[in-house]
Length: 391
Length: 220
Image (cartoon, rainbow over all chains, first blue to last red; front, side, top):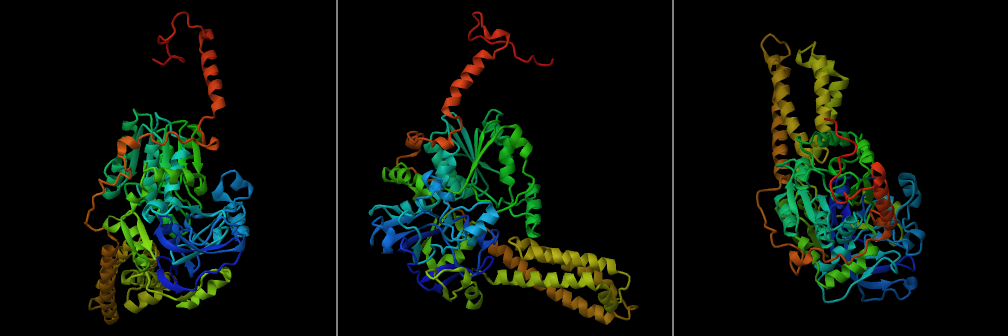
């Protein structure tokens, strides 16, 4: 089969690889009908997250049709079922899964010892996201082996196009969880940094959850326009001060809830000197991330407010204003998405036409064009917001 | 080039796909030029740091070893940046560095320098490298620019029933208890505390709803 394979920094190739095989009775194989490139794939593209090896298949946003099941899948799935595969692999049985904390399932990371050393304790196995999270082959391919398939799936009905359902795998529940864990109240102003795909979903989630005011921050005109279409007031940080404008919009008190949909790769520009310093330190290995957004959110957030962080961070960040955070009594909620916690509710909202996640797709191309599309997506060329791939 | 990817198969299980043949890479010509120049820069910079006298003697520029070492650090820096995701910055800094190198070597071509022929040859090489750096920097800048084309996404609300209908449509969604900002049982405590902790005994004496003097009093 063909698959998008990581061969080194900024080196993605559409290779011919062997087909996946069932190796555990709880496995299933799906024939991929659609997959996507995620913003967090770019951290791997730039080799900012360690433990990728040449030959690793990329991709964690996948859907398709079940073509083979292991004997212990026990009727949870059968051949022909149409499924969206969450990016987190879950067992459904451990204490964390039972508590609904699926992204920290204790059983599915097959490199548990490595993760224990690096993170303190392991988190869930992920598709296509380094050997720290199990080294599982990803779904930017023609076929995908799904471990723990009896739990790791979202069954979806026929009759709804892939574009509307694919993002149940990651970005839609990610944006939703980002908003949900901010516990939005009807009087809240919610500020969202980043108008990429997750940011766009977070904006719409905040609107659906009834925020009084949703403010979106970015610099790319098309992304700001898309954010505005979704109900946000927009701030272009290249043209104005984010802190001043947020204070203007909130009577000087700051937003109640702040959502970081940027993560570790804040844009570098001279007018934000901390980003230049972070970049320089990254180049010589003194820092792994560029947490400008985190610093700005902590500064501008209203005292006793909540900071929600769906944005991915890799390792060690400098100059985090803990004094501001502590003295203002801010709450931080963060984590990878517990996809299965939200999937039934979000599927229902799609079926009831409350939301159509396909708005975010700007480029739909064959899998073979994937390597080139990594660059188009990374550089936001041609108005690119989200790339969907069809094997 | 399956050798490298095959070597890492030790980290894969039986059911994991293995690379059989590699396809075209996302690395383009601009990327490969940046990498080659980045490593060249690091190598040259290391040589300038470690053996500056060899260079100054060859060019008849004895006494300028400290300057050569400084240029070596600069070259290494430009190399590191050229190998990073910000390769355009690295390549353009190489172009600037080439101009500096040319300006530094040019006086060594004067007639009274017995090594002027070597200096002249070095100058020619520097000019050649500067041209390559310039071409590479241009290629990287144009490859990674967003371009001027603009698309309109005004019609992409994502709400089939419209934005107005979407506002608050998910208020029926219950926030999980582990994500509530203020646990319900605290609300009553807060109300109770706010009433009983008013200054002057908490009695309002018919001033219910009227504004009270600020507490603590503001400093005039």
